[in-house]
Length: 361
Image 1: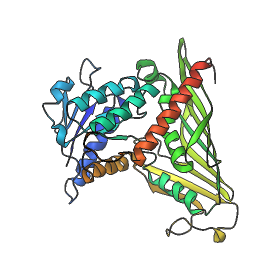
Image 2 (image 1 turned 90 degrees about the horizontal axis):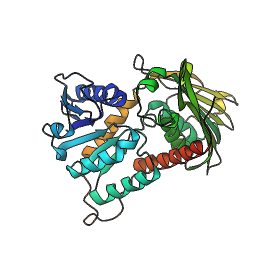
Image 3 (image 1 turned 45 degrees about the horizontal axis):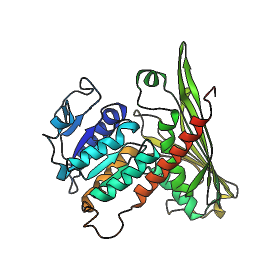
Image 4 (image 1 turned 90 degrees about the vertical axis):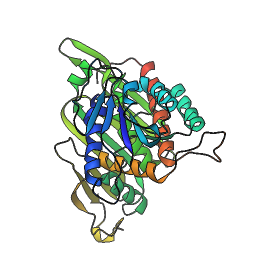
């Protein structure tokens, strides 16, 4: 079993990582495959006081040095949940303390220079890094993946992802993100690269968030358009001033359309998939043996717990890497390569939106 250290107790650290880890420990603790040992140790270098209460499942420390008194880096997983501009410095500090297993909140780095430095540090220190990509670990993404690769609806032509939600309060009271590109787009970008392969940036733009007498540049939302080497075109849309919530992905094929809806919040963990083939259902080639795939399908899909489960199992099944002078061969893995490709495209999108003036949507 591995003990979690969560550094950064904002929305992602306390609201997502800590809760998910406590849930995962409860689910696997009484089985033959325990993954997480409690308590989860948490600290927030930016907060003047703890943001979460201490419980039997969570030990809250005031500083990172204090948190190190409760965990052994050799048997721990560090969850890096600080804002993107602070991420690399924290990874470097944790590596200096002996941590080798780390889960990074998305995106992996705040700039191309930081990303390149992160890759070098990973290789030199023998780090096992995983970036949160729970959409890719979801059951919905798995079904879409099988549709794409199984060919039942023909060739994939276009992906459109909509991630809309009202985010006024958090945007007005926190400063962890520099633009809307850092909020929701990383989830959909990683999913698009997973489904359709490598891509280049076509266009990207952001607009301002306006509320009464306040205005936040580039925090109102973002549009990103990609062109994949496979010929697929992807449009990612995120409106952070929307009146309603939406998390959907539409995959258009030669032979039909698949529309997926991710769970909208913590109050319900069910996803939906609606498949409309252009040809009669009997002529489809189902992507698995689970019966007919036409129509509407509803199923449980706790994606973040699924991601954490997979990450901890990977950490336990693979040894920590040796430092570069000792370790033979390359260390790249598919998940880290995808995280790097996602981060590089995000950096290109940031550069494109910074060069152009922000404005209204």
